[in-house]
Length: 420
Image (tube, rainbow, N blue to C red):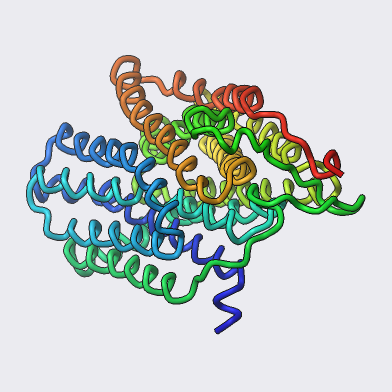
């Protein structure tokens, strides 16, 4: 039992499962919308209001969730978050009116808002600085595996057992996770490279660790440049991910005439490339650090490379070849996942553990607001012009703009070599 309670890689695996469960639960309504629309007689406006209810609640919940988790701690805070959003998932099974569906979607968004602040705080607690981007990249692959598994699991459950049982099963999975987490995971011993601690001078062959400016740690979060770097990094990059998550099947259908049964292979390829980007970016950051490059500089290099990967996605708006579009969209989503693996790690680099969840919540709020924006913007553009070109232009350039802002806002920090 001691191994299971102390292994950081088991903890990382549980984080991966949590993110996977979150994405499956998040997509249950969008996957079954055609069937549920016929069953309940929804209008397009009804469905749109349900989507906005989730996004608005997610935006409203992230900052408060971070504050709560910083006070409860990750063991009980994460168990509480998973319990609450699993109960919200179960409640979907009893919804029978438009108002009820809006209410349960709001509840799901509000409670799921705590997942990523928890996960990033756990990573700061369990992993040394040079491994955090790699660990984040690993657990964040759940945001790609979830969309791959969701159609398979949800359609199988719904087809064989119906809506109520589908919601019960999905909710039960999350509740089991919460019990396992609370039973297995205890807080590890403090590491020597967290912002609360000053590491000993490094040797020439050891990773170059960076120390926070003690004055910046005393500032309120809203006055800290690193917090705003994370905020704007999420604000500019998350809308691209939301765009692909919700509009990719519609794009492949309208642009390339793909039917529902033909969408499986392109989606699997895109999200498989995305997983490689998430793991690869974390691995590259760790390799650069182990070769003596300062952690912060390693992140900046890898984030810049990730910001370049979405540029070719412009081709998707013009190419008549579906697999060319699939490839460039896969590169863009791989860039996003690698970008996020390092951007999330920036928080644990610059803040003590008791502020990590709050700062992550602040940035996730920005990403959720960006999701609301892209939902409205994409709908307006497509209704007005019928063209995806403006959306792909935005997707291609957004990460470079985010990198410039993050690079400009992050404060200068001394390294352990400079303190030696």
